[in-house]
Length: 629
Image (tube, rainbow, N blue to C red; front, side):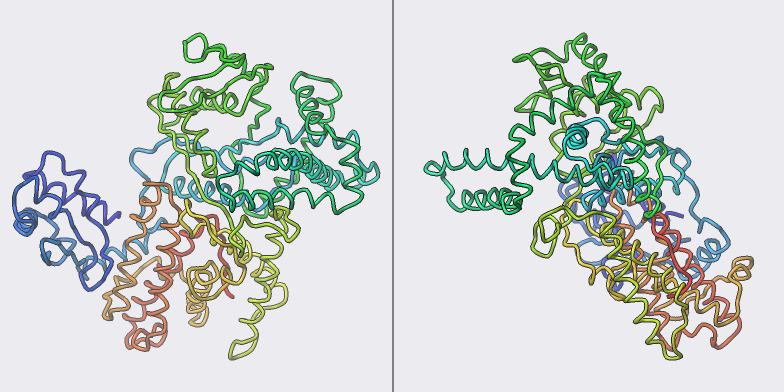
C-alpha cells in the first residue's frame, strides 16, 4: 500500500467542504522530518488561512473533524498554528507488515493505469571508448527504467547511439593516414581507440592554436583580466599536450587542415562514398562489441539500440514536412525553425545540405510516436543540452505532438578532487572501464580488511572475496552517482563511495548481508517465515521505527517518478539500513535469542522484510546484492 497516497486521498475528502480543488493542498501532506511529531504531517492550514479568511488552527480543526483515518492512525493532533500530526496505529503497522511479508512484491501492486514510456539514455558515440562522462546518463536512465517497470508501467529503453557523426570522420581519416596495420589486425578495437585519441589530440591542437591567436588579438579589449588569463592558460595547456611531444608535434605540422579533412571524410560517408561506407560497416561491429562489453559489466541491457544512422534516410522527409507545414524556412541558406521565446532558431539543415542532431532527434521522435505511441518520452542527457531540448520540444509541439509528455532529465557533472571535470593527470577523460577496474580493486582491499578483522577469523575464500569485490565495486560506482540529486555536480572519491558507514552501496550491502547472517546462524530458511509470517507487535521504539520505514517503500518508489530522481530511493534505502542497524545493535531487540518463540518469529519477519526491501530497492537501482561480506 502507498500509505502517503492513501492519506492524501482521505485528506482530499476532508478538504472538499472547504475548497473546490483540494489537489494543490495535498502536496503539503508529507512524512514528518522529526519523529517526535508523528509519522506524517499536513501543513496546508497556513496556506488556506488567507483565501478562507480564517485562523489556520480553526481550519485544521475543521479538517480533522471531517478526516476519516481511524483505521490507519491514532487520533490526529493539532500543533502550533495549525500543523496536523498523524501517527500510524501499531496494530495497523503489524498487519501491514504481515501482508507485505506474505507477498513476493512486498505489498506493492502494479499500477492500475500503466503508462507507455520511452527512455532515451546512455547514447555514447560508438567510435570512441566509453568514459566517466557516460556513467550518469547510463545509471540514471537504467534506474528509472527498472523502477517504472517494477511499478507496472510499459517501458522501452532506447540507446540512441552516436554512430554517424564527426567522430567517424576522425576514425576514417586516422585509419587512412596513421593506422598501425599489425596492431589493427591483432587488436582492432584498441587500434581504433588509439586512432581516435590521436585524431582528437591533433584536431584539438589546431583549434587551440587558432583560438590563441584570436584571444591575443582581444587582449587589450578584455573587460575581465582574470577570466582572460584563465582562458589563456587553458588554451596554452591544450597546445602544450601536443607541442611537448616531438612526434605528435611533427604529425600536427604535417596535417595543418586536419579538422577540415575530418569533415570531408564525414560528408563522404553520409553521401554514400563506397570506401567510407565499407570501412564504417567494418568498424561498427567492433565498436559495438566493445561498448556492449561495458554494458554487460554494468548489468545493463536495452530494448533498442537504434543509432543516428538508422534515422538518416528519414531526415530529408522531416525537413520537407516542416517546410510544408510552414514551420521551417530558409535563412542565410540554412533551413531553420524560428521559435517564440528563443533568441536563435533551431537549424534542421545547414546551407551545405548537411543535417544536424536536431534533425535526427525530430526524426527519432516521430518514429517513436508512430511505432510505440508513448505517453511520455524521457531524455536522460546532461544539463548542457538544455537549450537543445527546449527547442526540440517546442518544435515537436508545433509539429503536432501535443499529447505526449516530453522531459529532459538533466544531470550535472562528475568532478575530480580539484573541482574540475574528472580526468586523468594527463588531462584525458577517464575511461569508464579503467574506473570500474579501479573501483573493483579498491573494493577488494576493503573486503579483505573487513573479512580479516572478523572475531572468528576470515569467512570468505579467495574466490568469494573476488566475487564480493566485483559486486561491491560496480555497486559503489552506480550508487555514488545515484545518491546525489541528479541536477547537482558531485566529486568522485573511491574512499567515500566504498566506506562501510554513511550513505554508500557498501553500507547497504553490508546491512543486507547482516540479515542473511541472522538466518544462517539460526539455521532458518526465510521461505518458512514467508509462508506463515507473523504480525510484528513492535514492542520497542527501534522496531516501530523500522516498521514505519518499511511500509513507506511503495510511496518512495512512486515519489521517485514525480520528478524522476533516483536519489529519493537511495535516501530511503539508507534510512532503512540505518534503522535496521539501530534495531540490530539494541540488546533489547535480540532476534535469535528473543524472550519468546512468538517474539522471535515476529523479529525474523521484520528482518526478512528488511532484507527483501533492500534487495528489491537496490535492484530498482540496477545494483546486485551479495549474501555475505
